[in-house]
Length: 505
Length: 115
Image 1 (cartoon, rainbow over the protein chains, first blue to last red):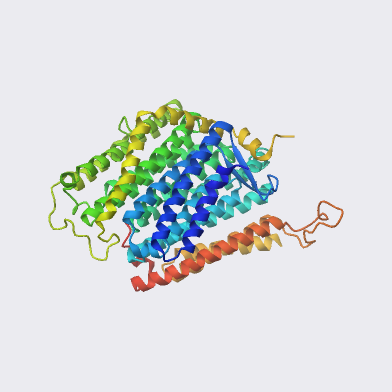
Image 2 (cartoon, helix red, strand yellow):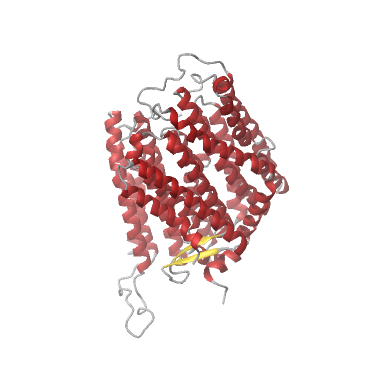
């Protein structure tokens, strides 16, 4: 029994419960939250270390043998995702200590946050497709409550769209699971991979695959299904936005990659080409939406959509280099995007608005913040030597090797437009002179009350995440080797299947 | 029997989607409730329908006698019903708060956070 594998799930669960028991005791909850997030990050690091050195880790819950019981599996891809999730959990918890207002803390911010982490980690480690559905729901319910916590009108309106589309996606997911179960009689992913490879109805298999594509496409916010994201991500307090931006859509991308490398590989000429087309369209629409926006967090929200395109581009190419690029891209994107949201929160704390027109003069008063913004902003656009450059380079190389010139051209053009909209934020919020009337007067009744002491703990995660971005960019090789190994595991699922089910008879 | 259920499930999906596409927020709510139930029924049907025996293993055997109802599908539906119920309860409260905050049940008036 692997301590780190179960720790990745048990630590956030126990932290959530402990925080609930300390209801209305804010200081205790803050301490528990911080300790829990630290322990969770430690457990995920331990998990990655074990998986990288000893191979795929599995645990059969309740000791029922594999195709019957609930299986928890961690291959390299899962472990990498879990580590990044753990890192974001810790960073955003530290940030919340300074930025979250007392009322939301009293009404269960920390328990919900840790249940969210539990759902996300569980989805990364699920070895059974119905179990994956359950973890998705755990994550969704926590995210629903976090999204409306505080009950401002904008939050409620955003939540209606977010909840509706996610429920529809869950219903699609459940439908697909039902048909899959009727077809194969199993739901264990490793067992499904075996059963689907010898099934006699490829037409129905592709149909179910497309149902999964729609269900996870909504969760991942891909091209025609992304409307809930820019309508809701800018409404909650910034710490909540940041953890949503970093983790939630990426769980959808994770599920897409898992399902379309392990289960539905019978017809890559159709499904994976479709994914590639969706990838290109997602990149383009996302970035064009961002160009039209004039509010800090709305721009960033549209950029999430655009970046999802890059992540599934590697899946669409379906080559080791492409998938390695995708995994690298997800890792880099989670760090950078969370960081950008955190920075937008600091700007809000200083100026009391997210509207670019009213921001300004931050470069003069906060040169350090301006510098910290440039690191993730350039990284997002893919400027060397930051982390985004290495990620985009490998995707572009994979695209050229697969002779998919159209999507490569889109990827490069979208990179340029990303740089343009980052420049817009830079020019408006940082470089432009002070607008005067808005300076240092947060709107009354706004999410972030005046609490100048909080700035230290808001700056700390931003500095650390920016340093990680630079470090990944300057020393991309170790991470790339790791993602390459993860991609090879994904493309040759024999090791995964044998680790879960034991060697074939 | 499977044919009848297939028609019922199809009808439920169609009704649910129709209601979700309406402008009234209450119809949206009913639509979502029907949608999860349609998915549950689909799992129930696709696992195979039988009225033969309950899946109880007799003494001295390691499997129940041949035609038996699939317990796994029912366990899954039970999980899905509980999840669906919880989420729907949340949605009801959310809709109530939304109507209070916006003062109308028309989804077209919920445009403030759109882009």
